[in-house]
Length: 108
Image 1 (tube, rainbow, N blue to C red):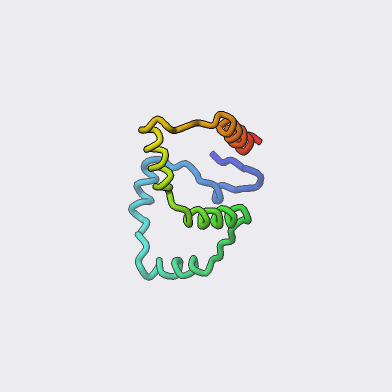
Image 2: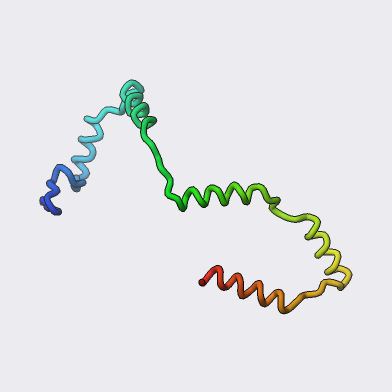
């Protein structure tokens, strides 16, 4: 059976093979030797890759974030001791404003 997709012939499309065809093809094909693989690898080295502006911006952001510590140990200790002492106070207005800002940044 042959299918023509906009001028693509049967030689250009993956065709279905029977189990017998697959076995015969596997026996007749030989694995590539190191000498055959070397020119292909050398050709790939000459290719160039360009990043989009978004990818460059993400890379810059990643580098900036790498400068900051993962956790502020001093701040964590302050909060921990305030919680233990019962002196930790929550500013409801500040919390609500931060929640609105977060919602705005996520959903626009």
